[in-house]
Image 1 (cartoon, rainbow, N blue to C red):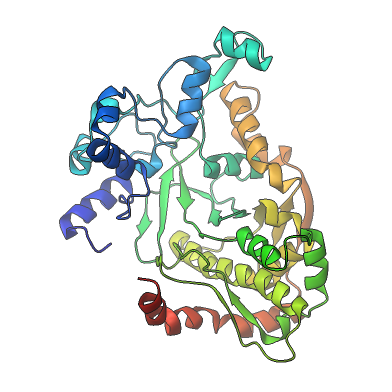
Image 2 (spheres, rainbow, N blue to C red):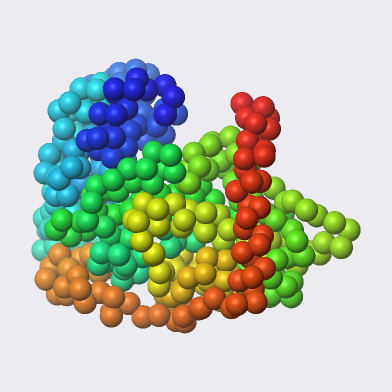
Length: 392
């Protein structure tokens, strides 16, 4: 958090749970950039909208946002789990024009009805209700059916995270874990992020020529025993956020030998992502002060039975593979609408989301991974200065 005055950063965290990024990669940075470098655009703009809120306005003609969609703006006092307005002090500290911020609607509420022109163009019923847009985290919670307090899910998508609803606003600035406005009355969602998760396997596939399918990669990895012949892969290909915040960190293969096979390399990538998730999961359990188990796994990476089993073995937790995990966000969007319209209740969602398979830790593999993981965080600490020298 260097670059912030101590009192300033404390106020941001106390009120909103986090703070604007110093590299400008968030809404406040975008607002300030436009105001400084494109003043004519700033003068002509009526609203600054997040993409999901822009789409909502396109459908309804109504400018709106929700505490969920505006989480990354850090402009809402989230000490209340159901905030209804922006915080004037945070707006002042950010130095932006608060009059251009869209009005807030409760998450998962009906904003309006679809305009006739849009309905005709898309073939939708005139008068259909339009619900607030939702960020990927909130859609994933619904799509995984992990909506009640303590019910966890883990995303292995391009990036990745581990989340669960909780009842308290909290921030761990050391491990970069926080809570954001949640999905029901009186709760929050645990928020954290890995810069690269499933993307690591895609990256490896491209290195191998891009013609090998993911199923073929998984089959190849399965021919390597747990531990990948002693090879480690660190998946920090684009820096990292949680549980270490270091944009200069980089990935790599470690402990290669002349005996290392292509199968070992593929399996090492899959295991490295799982080791990184265990590292994050430990931070999440410190955050919640309790065991987080029966984790629903979603995202493109969750399509791999092998990767699900590797996570169960590495993390020593039960992994529940959601059916059609690649489309979890789409399922979640539909379920948000269903709840908003009163068709289903939140407590019914877990039973409405089908599971494909459940994976439990294998003791033999668990023993191998337990020994290996002891070395994983040390690979970062031993290379941290190197990363900073090489990636200024």
